[in-house]
Image (cartoon, rainbow, N blue to C red; front, side, top):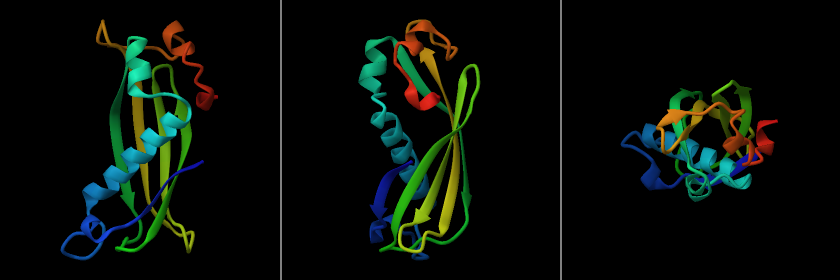
Length: 135
């Protein structure tokens, strides 16, 4: 599911004229957030139910250089659902050529805001969120 579109701006680039590493991460995080928002999972909704969401791991693979003016799209899909951890794959593509530019693997979990402990995905509070995207 493509959830993020952006045209790389000159200020996204470093002195070598390609997109800065931190900008890749920023775009992937924004795409992950947009993905969750599409399913109604926002920080205020989670907090109102006593749930937090934490990223555990973020790995990026750079495949092709990305320059200012490139129209990028990021496709997001769930790779694995564990008892506590959800792993999603984010693929950054050149919108025009459809070439893959980069890929990120993001792992996250939900945690109980009061107890500060991770929650199993089978927990009643999480089930009440109606997480259709986990199926």
